[in-house]
Amino acid sequence: MTKQAHFPLATQGQRIGLLGGSFDPPHQGHLHISRWALKSFGLDRVWWMVSPGNPLKARGPAPMERRLAACRALADDPRMIVTDIETHLGTRYTAATLQALLPRYRGVRFVWLMGADNLAEFHRWKDWDWIMETLPIGVLGRPGEQLAAGCSPAARRYRNYRLQAQRAEALPFREAPCWSLLTGPMVRQSSTQIRARGDWPASVAPVGDSGKTPPES
Image (tube, rainbow, N blue to C red; front, side):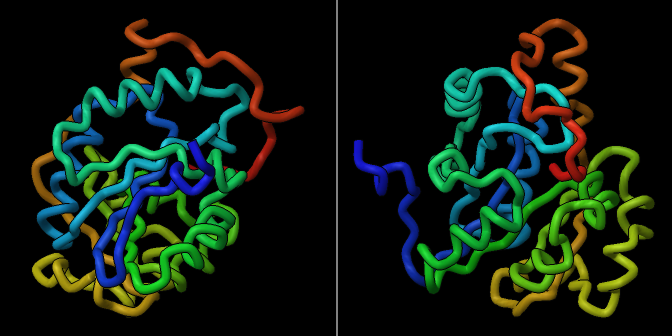
């Protein structure tokens, strides 16, 4: 397989949501927010970008091939594309991923997708303000996280750039900074809960020498 074959196909003008994470393991919550984003933001595709590891965590996730296989088995819509693109870009942080990714897909309308829990901590991500000012951001409600997200430093700093939920379908066409927070029915499931029940193997390898890296999803 050529290196280029690792990169999903996208054409100019397509509206694509980027959902990054360790997917350790993937679950019904990932499916729910992907369907929600496809419908509410008017997206053509959602890419599940399975990361090599989360810089926040001192220990690495389950092996990449197992997580990819689990994602592909779960994703039940051809508009959901599972990819290990960060492995082939050689990036770990979202900002670095976007810096490497966007020049490859000129003319594609990307939207960064995140849960409300991530927006609450977004100001702790590496180069988070650059991300906010580079791509429109779609935020999907997570149980118990809406208040913290709406009051977060990121939400306060960019409050004048918030797109109301009833106009969310316009998000892919807006210039950054622009973000929208959706609230509605949610799935009360998380990867942490699944691992705690013993339904998924424990993390297997150190991410770095100390594990003390800036928080980021």
